Structures are given as structure tokens and as C-alpha cells.
Image (cartoon, rainbow, N blue to C red; front, side, top):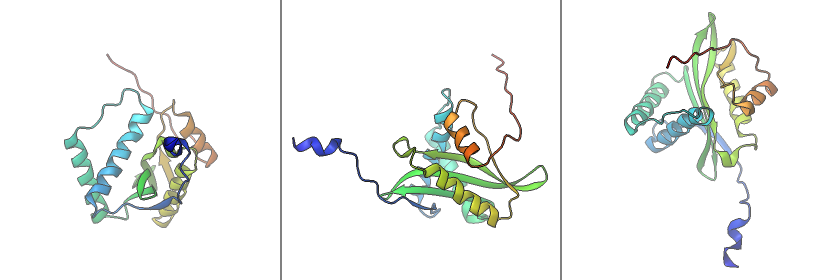
Length: 168
């Protein structure tokens, strides 16, 4: 009977949203792993990064955030101090207009359906507006119905289609 408490749902702490700290290598590493998961979640054929690739990507994030924070922004959601969701943004020019591209968005499965992705996207839009972006741009795999539905609810529209043909 003493173990019964383990089966009860944990009361959710207030989710805290904030930029990741480029001075905290462990936080950047976790952020990098979560970004990698954004590809894994939507593609069954995803090949995981090697430890060397993860270190390189973490280093790139640190460099981007410390050199030019007006072009790169990395937000995370934390529940009780643990990272539970991420969004990685990159300002660029698309169709000759300033645009904010969402490079990665991922929420831990235990926290899905709680509005974490929506809040991360809302915060991303606020940052993009402040940076002078004309629009947000994101890519979603055709099989990722939940993310397609979220984008549609938030007012995103299809701007172009990406076609792929396997050559093997």
C-alpha cells in the first residue's frame, strides 16, 4: 500500500518559459537533445545524432546566441526545473521579406496536450515581431497531424509544398 502514491498523477507545477542560458552548457545540451527529438518524433526513419554531432550543434547554438541574438532565439519550457519543451528560431529572409523560421519545436510526451507548444509558438511570435519579422515560417511533416492542427488553429497557412522522391 505504501507504493500507491506512485500511481497518482503528479500535480503540475506552473510551467516557466524563458530563453535558454548560453552560459549553461548542460542546459544547451538538453536543448540540443530536445531539438533532435523534433525530427525523431515526426520521422520514423530518423537517424540519431552522434555525440560529436550533438557537441557541435550545442557549440553552434552557444555561438549563435552569444554573437547575434537578434537572429537566433532559443526558448524552453520548464516544469519544476526540468526542461519539458523547446522552440528554436532563426531570423532570415524569405521571399525578400524578413521572416522568422521555426527550426525546431518539441514538447516532451508527458506534457503534450497542456498548451506548452502553443505558448512556445506565441512567445516565438512575440519575439519575431520585436525583431521586425513580416511572418513566421515553419515546416511540418505531412504525417504530423497534431502539429498541422496546431498551426491551423494558430492561423498558419500553407505557403509552399515540398515534394520528395526516393531514388533507391
